[in-house]
Amino acid sequence: MESELLDDQDYASVHQAMQLLSSRYLHALTLNARMEAWAEFVTSVEEGFDTTWAWEFDNDIADRDWLHDAWPILTERIRRLRKPELDALDDRFRAATAPIKPLGMSRSAMAEQARWWQFRSPLLVTGDPAEQMPPTWSPAPIHIQ
Image 1 (cartoon, one colour):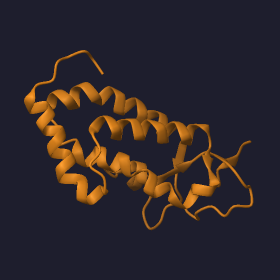
Image 2: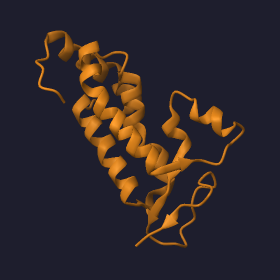
Image 3: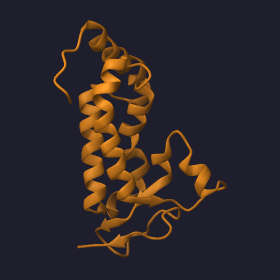
């Protein structure tokens, strides 16, 4: 993040986002914690998502959902300062994933959704090759060691 001083309004907007979204997302984590969690998740997907957690993949993207919901609550300054970082993480996530098998919607319609990340699955997985994958992960990801 750029070196720019934040003011009371900026901090208040982060606090407001935490408060407003805490009941929906179970934990009142800070913006920094959510960004770090999204970054860690993106890295795990890039390195090969563990098949043990394949059925939890949708839950693991909750930090990105929180960022989406918090974004309009945050001040313009915070959005401007954090957008390059978020965009870079999103680009990495897109590169490490593929569109899921459409479920009643076209691939282009899925790509246009505001929560586009919910319509993607990992390209690479680790773990037991016999582990059953979600049926929407089609084509199946490549197992790596």
